[in-house]
Image 1 (cartoon, one colour):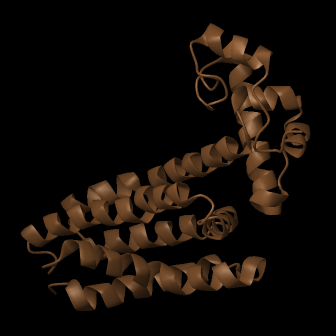
Image 2 (cartoon, one colour; image 1 turned 180 degrees about the vertical axis):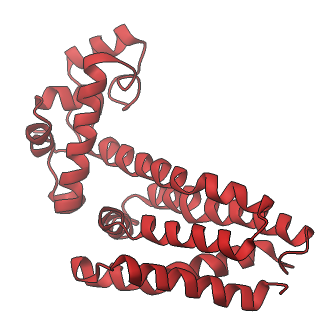
Length: 236
């Protein structure tokens, strides 16, 4: 008898995948068009809800199928097993989170008002990162880091590590213009990120839903992060 992680891709799944030129159950291809695309999105949304509610071990493909209003066979048509579905959720949310502040970060190098633009970024960044579903997702990734070390490393590499590198490039450009002092732009980026996030993120990780913050609280953390950062790295 197969476990949730071992259910095979059905014959129908393999045939549909072959017809689309897609390897069966790898989570790709189906998001391209039409009814399959809608089902793919429904499965992803349902799976995210189930994983966030019950964690990896507690989640079942049956429950995902029921919540998505599709058959279990359809779930396996899109994702070969629970592990691949979980991986798709994590990598998809990494990509979504990365795009939220990318444009703001990319524009920092050309800033004419560094304090104002850093404050604008910090307020948006702290709001995005402390969204309840992302906090719950972060907890799950940490809890499953030994079972899925590659996934945990991917989260870190494509999340914090890439964000730090991108921000470091902007700080280096601002330093060349004489608007920041940053002998080590990467360290400056890491300092700035944790000045923004450390207090609310650490509290949220351990307090669950009791750690929800008001917009004014998050703005205060963001604004104070910019003030302290510029006291260390500013040129004014």
